Image 1: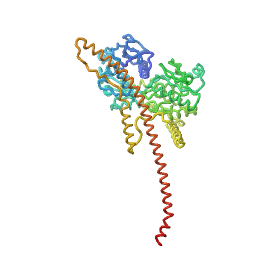
Image 2: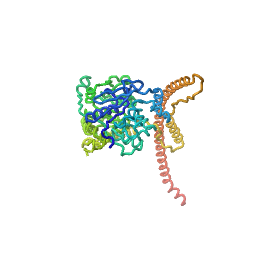
Image 3: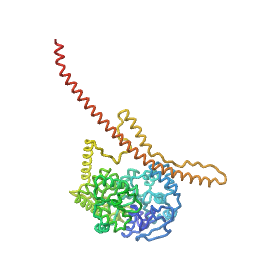
Image 4: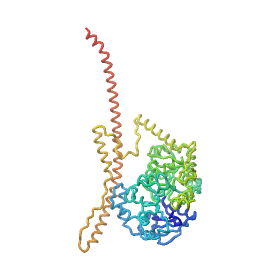
Length: 399
Length: 175
């Protein structure tokens, strides 16, 4: 295979030690694990900090860095018309249709770096390029410079962007496409009519050695009541407002001492009068986060747009069962294959599942243990790395 | 099977089966819902549909279905795109066009922000209308069923009375 002995070059819009987000964390974890496995890996990225900071200015200086043992090459951003981008993005998020010209404008004014694209083209012989995620200019324009040769880790879910014509064309451009979950792969096949021979399920990876201590968390917060834990971005795209609404209705109807704890960055609107019922824990360090998972009665992941969901894997590692939204094929798939969680489609199912888990502590604990076994068997990095290497470098290299 | 990398390893347990637990929870919800219906207690829906879930069988329902359907097709078609046409202005033409484009973009941004909010309202209003249409339909079906039962009871009563009368009529005819 022509790909052997080349470096693996991840092409991503941003990269850093403290970067948040599922796709970003998976890419960083994979790159670091590949280095540990003795492979030559580089990350090719822009000088942008992250999605929240945007691509209006260069946060980092261009150059070569070492981040977590991985070589990172940063290239200067191309100035973008952020107003035009925002107008089109707002139209899409509001459910409005956009024209072909607007699709072009959307991807042209996305995060881009001309120097990065020149580098990709000039150094094609030295790298196996792996682009991730599908949504940004770095993947769309970067993959054009090595057409037919690169690999894609799309981090795809059923969202408005996935239906754009530009992305229908993008998915046909790669030598191979790698997925974090089976439903994600099924969605890609359904949306883009892809050749199954080019698709590989690598699965997502997590550090399975982490241990949380729930007692430490409960003592620190003087908390003895049961609580639902939410971890993640605090916005509508993750369905947090729905969880808050359902939790408030549950409290009104059932009047229990149950609490809801929120972990993550950013502001959150807590309904008046429920300040003592909804605990805003803010951003937590890794160890404190694992202690919180261990202390939680259950973890709720209401998002319907997941391609893997690190959150539920982290919950299961601390033997905490999960409650997910029935409209998310990925998280429901994990629940059904692990027997580690339940799923709700509307308020009544939310209430039914919650009451069931609260009333059956032994079943709840057992579900948590089954979830842990699922993560240990499927999401160990060695397993993910082996699948990745086999897909990108070929079976001999993987062996 | 565990050695094959592409396989997802399922975790099975003799005591815990999530699909069965979900079926049990859903069975309980269905039971509570039908109990509530029998007692004439509302079982509110938090997630009503955007498209009309009624069959357009009667003339009035056809009209209702048509309008609900049209509303579900148009409720989010509000936003606007730039309609800027370049106008030749000597000397400062490019600067003037750039200024106009920025001004247009600014207006479009605010209009579409407003459109997004209006869509949120339309979304809720449409779901409420669809839920209401279903409730009205269920109510009218119950009323029709009640009237049909009453009609049948009356018909049976008429039949009984006719049966009682008919021997006398026969006797009379024979005289």
